[in-house]
Image 1 (cartoon, rainbow, N blue to C red):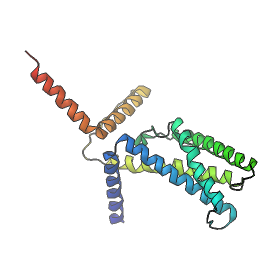
Image 2: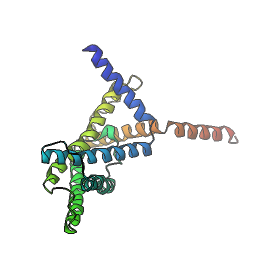
Image 3: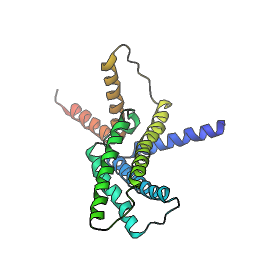
Image 4: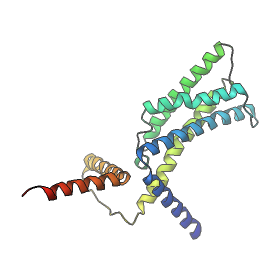
Length: 209
């Protein structure tokens, strides 16, 4: 049990180091790619559950699978799903994720309906509810899983000192959130911060007395 727990902690630490080494753009690209894979999987799994067998998608069904992330990703971008700092994602963000997935699902249903009007039925309409539930679970679940991994690793980081804000109410909560975000941004861009600090120090040293 102890060995298994240490391996899990080591995996969390490695994942956190990997995430810290990624730029903001790389993290955004990672979650976009992850959403594309998960939404495509959600359509395929919905088909399989609806038909009661593991489906080998036909050409038309592949069209529906490909359309799901094409429709959803722009909605997610507009709803701000790729701007959040995953480590400090609040629980109420699940409702934002749910609304984004709902809008994306409705848009996807609209596109499917347009194909049906042109007599090109891609998938049974009855899978849309299954797809919506699976999409919310996968998209929301993935983000909170990453939050758990990253936050759990951060909580045992020996290189950090704890800071206690006592009796500050909502102001204290806002300060704590801003402080965590600032430290994350500094960690992501430590090279740029170090360079900027060096430039400032050099300019100060050269300033005439």
